[in-house]
Image (cartoon, rainbow, N blue to C red):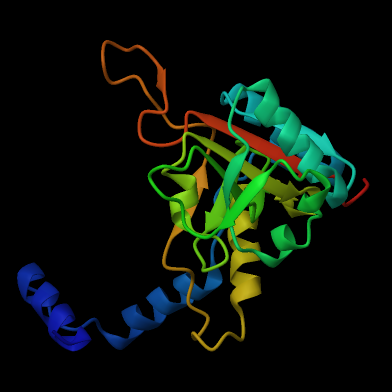
Length: 230
């Protein structure tokens, strides 16, 4: 069914014809303007304080973190986390250039397999796109270099995030995504899927008892690279 046919069916169901020109212009102006809602003062902080707020909110949401000074320290941080949680050293890892540049060979016991997660994978390593300080949330847009299955199938998800990619509020995260999609052949389209992850998966639907890992990973660990001072 064509786009026009779909919209025509919707208009018919609403008993409404095409919008007048002035209303159409108003809608496009709003879509292109990205108006702001009220942004809490707690997210309007110097960048170093935004990072601290992000990490505090991570822990508040039952996640954990390790802070490292550079990318070379990531393999050791991952290996220590796995050992501390008694987790296997086999990892499903996103095929992202920044993750590929990390010297994983410094910890040869880590077994890396690039690509989508499989049902048998216990631990995933994902590339962190943006961290949102206001809520301790990770923004993870889908892409061939950032498979969405890594966010869902594995019991434990490790996200490697650069400190320079932490922003204050949700609106700023969307600003980053829009800015980095400009000029693309796809016509500035946003990714097909954008996941927001705030802590491990959980549910309290049954008898109001909180259970972790209800619909996804029961553990979320962030390795934050301090690549930006101040």
